[in-house]
Amino acid sequence: MTNTVRRWRLLVGCAAVAAAGLGGPVAGADPLQPVQPNPYGPAAQPASQPAAVPVTAPLPGVPRTVAAGPAAPGPAAPGPAAMPGVPAAAPAPAPPSALLPAASGTMRDYFAAKKVQLEPQQAPGFTAFNITLPMPAGWTHVPDPNVPDAFAVIADRRSGSLYTPNAQVVVYRLVGQFDPKEAITHGFVDSQQLMAWQTTNASLAEFNGFPSSVIEGTYRDADMTLNTSRRHVIVPADGSSYLVSLTVTTGAGRAVGNAPATDGIINGFSVSPREAEPAGVTHLPDAPHGPAPVVPAQPRAGAAG
Image 1 (tube, rainbow, N blue to C red):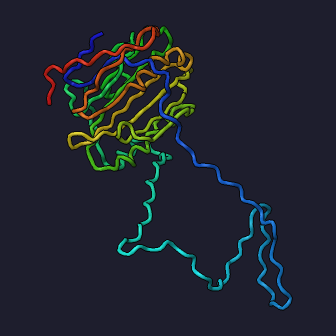
Image 2 (spheres, rainbow, N blue to C red; image 1 turned 30 degrees about the vertical axis):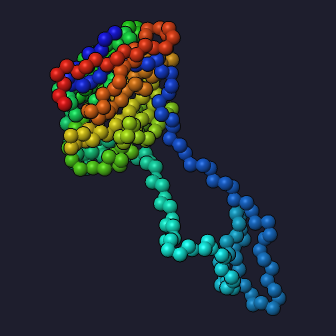
């Protein structure tokens, strides 16, 4: 299948049949080690000493804390000998702290509080950067009035199920001042507000070097349980910033059967600078017959530099 890359730079191809899951779950902190009890108990007071200030008895399993008295001066611990003319090494800087997800407020709430305007972008004529949206075999572009400000919507209309598996891309130009890393910490909240939401995976790791959030899980829509993956990416380009959002959803009862297509979209989706065109796109066959063939990208006809 030949893929023609249009001027508006939405690169739509067919994705590899990838069963690999999307980003790992947010890592939690190691559990604290249990505090060992003090095996010695309180120190006995010599008879010649004045009565000590009573100390509250320690709780079981918690050592008693006693204020330290003045310590007798002792010999200083030997340190490394300094070499003449060589300055002492500075302490290593602490590693940057990991991003923590916001407890409340969607990204729209955050931008509204910062007075940042969201200008919807359309695929025709879009040249700020490249967006690669893989197209599984049998899926098609569809107009969907249920997706406000849609940049692109693709779906599998052959499924015959009540809910059609689909992927949606929405792109906004962000006008105003804000901190991209602070903004992206609100990327989970819109999904977590869905009815009966259950998280299966989530991550705030960067995506192709850009601030990003991704969350996967299930939720209820009327009498249906849906399985979804939602990624937000903040991309700087042309002196501005853009919010790119990908949502891939299918019925939970058909999630396993649709996994080759949906995983292909999730794992093949990418955003990249305008100068970095992908080397090719991968065809996702209707049925697995060995490795998926790679279709080279075609030259861009009349694309702006």
